[in-house]
Length: 458
Ligand SMILES: *[C@@H]1O[C@H](CO)[C@@H](O)[C@H](O)[C@H]1NC(C)=O
Ligand SMILES: *[C@@H]1O[C@H](CO)[C@@H](O)[C@H](O)[C@H]1NC(C)=O
Ligand SMILES: *[C@@H]1O[C@H](CO)[C@@H](O)[C@H](O)[C@H]1NC(C)=O
Ligand SMILES: *[C@@H]1O[C@H](CO)[C@@H](O)[C@H](O)[C@H]1NC(C)=O
Ligand SMILES: *[C@@H]1O[C@H](CO)[C@@H](O)[C@H](O)[C@H]1NC(C)=O
Ligand SMILES: [Zn+2]
Image: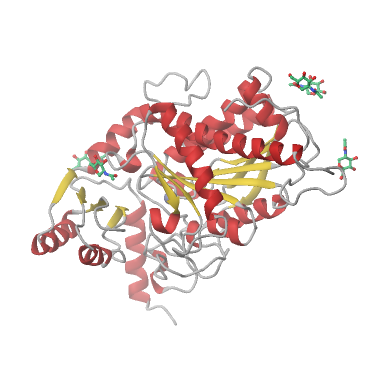
C-alpha cells in the first residue's frame, strides 16, 4: 500500500508535535472503582482496547480494584458509562501532572539530592545514563566478582546489560536470574534490582549469609531490560510502558510506536490479553522475539538453562508474587511446589516491613497474559521455578511510587527472593544426605549444585 502524500505530511507534523515536548498530564485523572459482579467486569474490560483508557489496574475479577488513567475527554466518556451502570467510582487524583512534577522535583539530576556527586544513591530514581555509568563503575570496582555482559542493542541503539556475579565455580554453580524494567514506567523495578546488585557486592566477604549465597550460586541480574522505553519515560512521557520500536507494515506505525516485550515471547503468542494494534499498550509485535528486549532474556536464559535454578521478573504494581501460568488458569505441573515456595516468600516479604502481598498462579491472581517472559522461561526453557513479582504499591501512587519507598520495597523483595533460594538450598541438602549413592547417580534436580558446608540462616 502506497501512502498518500498529504496524509504522510500530516503524520510528519503529528510526529514532530508529538515528540517535541515532555507530555503534560495537566487535567488527566486517575479514577478508581471496584466492579461488583462479572457483568461489570465485562463492561469495564470492553474499554481495554481503547488507547485513551490507560488501565493501571486492569479489571480482572469482581471486588478487585480497578484504576484507570484518563484524559479530559475519555474521562467524561468513562464517567458517564459508570454513572449509567450505577457503578461508583472515586477520583484518586484529578491532576496527574502534579504527581509527575513532584516526582521530577524529587529525582531529577541537578536537584538538591545528596549522593549525586559522591556516589550512587539507592533511594532515588536514576536516569538511564546514570544507571549505565553505575553498572560500569560496579564492574570495574569488583573485577573478580562481576562481569558486565552486553545482551543486545535496542531499536534506539542502547545496550541491554546483564551483570554476572560469581565467586568462582567455573560456570557450574546453580544460577539465579533477576530481571527488571521490561515495562518502562515501572520505575521501582530497576531501582530494586540495582539495590540487590549493590547489596550482594558490598556484603560479600563481610556477611556470612550473603557470602554463602554468592559462593553457592551465580547471580545474573538484568536491571533494565527496556532502556529505550525508560529513556522515553524520563524525557518525553512518564507513563510509557512498551519499547520504542517501529512496527513494520502498519499504516499507523509512525504515530503509534512500541511493542510490549512482555507479550513478545514465543509462548501462546497473541493469546488472551494481547493486542495486534500498534497503538495498544499491550501490542505483541509482528512475530515472537521480534524485539531486542525479549530476545536478550531468551538468549541469556537459554545459555543458562541447564543450571538455572530460579527466574524472577520484577514489575510494578499491586503487590503480588506469581508463578506460571499466565495464559491459562489450568494448574501448572509444579503447582504444589510453587505454592510452597510462594508461601515461604510471602512470609519473608511480610516479615520485613509488614506489607501485605497476594500470591498464586498469575492467571488467577492478576489477569491473563500471553507471550510473557515467566511462562516462556517455565514452559520452553524448562526452568521449574519461574516467578513474576508485582512490587509496591496497591494503587495509592501506582507507577509514581515516591522514592521514600524504594529501600523498603527493595528490602522486602530481596527477603522474598533469598528466602526462596535458601529454601531450595535446604531441600537440596536434605535430598543429598538421604541419597545412598550420591557419587554415581546425580539426582535429576541437583543441577550441578556443588556440595557445600552451608549455614542455614532462614
Ligand atoms: C503543564 O501545563 C499546565 C497548564 O497548561 C502548566 O501550568 C504547567 O506549567 C505545564 N507543566 C510543564 C512542566 O510544562
Ligand atoms: C582479584 O584477584 C586477584 C588474583 O586472585 C588479586 O590479586 C586481586 O587483588 C583481586 N582484586 C580485587 C579487587 O579483589
Ligand atoms: C573451567 O572450564 C573450562 C572449560 O570447560 C576448562 O577448560 C577449565 O580447565 C576449567 N577450569 C577449572 C579451574 O576447573
Ligand atoms: C483498593 O484500593 C484502596 C484505595 O487505594 C486500597 O486502600 C485498598 O488496599 C485496595 N484493595 C486491594 C485489595 O488492593
Ligand atoms: C562443616 O561445618 C561444621 C560446623 O561448622 C564443621 O564442624 C565441619 O568441620 C565442617 N566441615 C567441612 C567439610 O568443612
Ligand atoms: Zn509490568
